Amino acid sequence: MQQQSGSKRLKHSRYISGFDGIRTIAVIGVIVYHLLPYSLTGGYLGVPIFFVVSGYLITDLLLQEYEQNGRIDIWAFYGRRMKRLYPALVTMVLTTAAYITLFQRSLFVSLKSIIWTNLLYVYNWWEIGHGQSYFDRFNGESPFTHLWSLSIEGQFYLFWPLILVVLLYVFHQRKTIFYLVMGLAVISAFAMAVLYDPANTNRVYYGTDTRMFAILLGVGLAFMWPATKLKTDLPDKARHALNAAGIASLLLIILLFFKLSGESGFTYRGGMFLFTLLSTVLVATVAHPAGVMNQVLTNRLFDWVGKRSYGIYLYQFPIMIFYEAKVTNIAAHPLMNALIETVLILVVSDLSYRYLESPTRHYHYRQLPQLIKACAQRNSRYGWRRWLAVPAGLITVIALYGAASSPTHLAASQTTLQDHIQRNQKTATKDNQTVLSKQKKAQKKVAASKYQNVKLTNKQQTVAKTYDLTKQQLLTAKDMPVTAIGDSVMVDVSTDLRQVFPNTYVMAKVGRQVWQAPSEIHGLEAKGALSHNVLINLGTNGPMTTQQINNVIQAIGPKRHIYWVTTHVPTRNWETQTNTTINQASKRFSNVTVIDWHGLSADHKSWFYNDNVYPNPTGNKYFTALVAKHLTQESS
Image 1: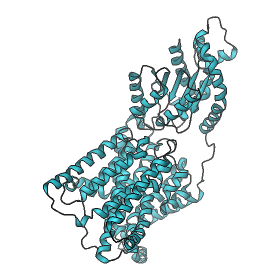
Image 2: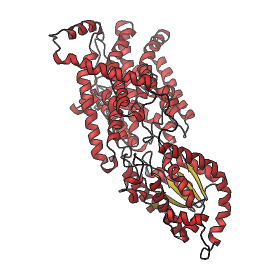
Image 3: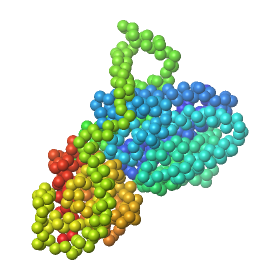
Image 4: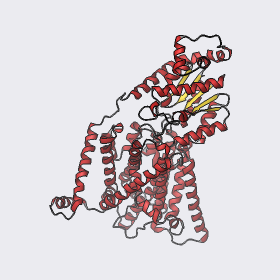
């Protein structure tokens, strides 16, 4: 995400234009992943590409300075990095905090911690303990989440020059330092694999130690592949091999952008390390002046995007999240909205680059007192521009007020919906054991029961009327064992489901995503809680791939009947893709029946709470009635 950090003392430094192309590829991957996650499931891997480029460029420049001057001016390096990174970061953090304070109070939590941890570049460690999963795209997604990577880079900039000076003093051969750095990179990748927890990826995803291998691979490359010492001419065989390696690495990187899901265990157990190795190869081939890759990745578009990649990465999340909070029908036109968001991101990033980042990058801050004095004069040479200090000061005051007044945790129950979900979650967990014992008796009772001469009780008549069920449907549902697996929508509707299906074992959790379901299913089967009828409602919190839904269905097994409810989440761009994936799965697996909740509820906004995602009491009745009619029809 950073630009090449040059120094006036370097006489032989070489600007490699192809690195703007690499940055462009990386930032496109990240942006597309965030806007259309189902289209580019591995787009988040743009971040390790940035890490490799930063590790290589920073180390190569520091080594050049050491060789030309016999020393590294660490304070000058810190000054250049601060001027390059801080103005835009401070602007983004304070402006976002001010906006939240005024207009988006649903995110008004822990602003003080978020601000100071970002300004001190330790936000990634704060997110491990306080933030949500990077892959949870629904439950209060934070406009600051992506800043974890900037903290890791900031830590690298702070400590690496000091460590490098020590290494250069202790070891005199670059090869020795190279082997040491490569060993540390392998240890970092191994730590990611060992510490990986499928239930909570925050530790390995945000941790400096588990992500440092990407930067270290770039660092190691700088020792063995110095940009200013590479030959401009190579024998034909070596040149062809260099070009082939560059093209192959680029194609494989693009392939993994489409294939390497952030929810896959393989990603953390070697997959991301493999991707980063490919990124290192790409960087090496672009850096070499005898190869063709520098020319391949050099053009005006890549140059424009690459130079603004820091701003594009920085401003993306606030723009996306604030836009999508106001436009509640994202799912109706996902591509159009993605295009609008992209344009907004590019416009803001360009303005930041032209009027903030570029001027402050070369500004001598010792002149700041004179600047303030000049702006205060009546006939200031800065004209109207001096008045920009007024909104800047106002934004700062609002942001600091928000930081001082925001709670460290959201109140336990702020809305009727939250109260309802929390109450249902406790009830479902409490009653599951009782339900499990009843299910074993109900298994036999379903086939043997005859309902023709059974008279409904007053309570049963009320239930049948509430959910618009026939006598046959209600009595069939009463004896039917069901295992309900889902996210917070399933928690929301669980009480109504048990009114009609009293033998329902509810395994639902707020924030659950489809890739987490297989392990839960295996756990249910191990304790005998996976009944013949499995009701699933997953897809609210994020998109699902064909492989992920296959994994769920295969974990349940072919002998059970699966009823998969389509998702109603018009505020997210993955709604259509998720429902398409569900419908396609029913064509591949004969034991899967689709319950089209989306189709039934699409034009009934009054069935939902204000978020237009969670069914309200009226919606829960229609949801339950739809489920009951499908399950009892299949059983009759």
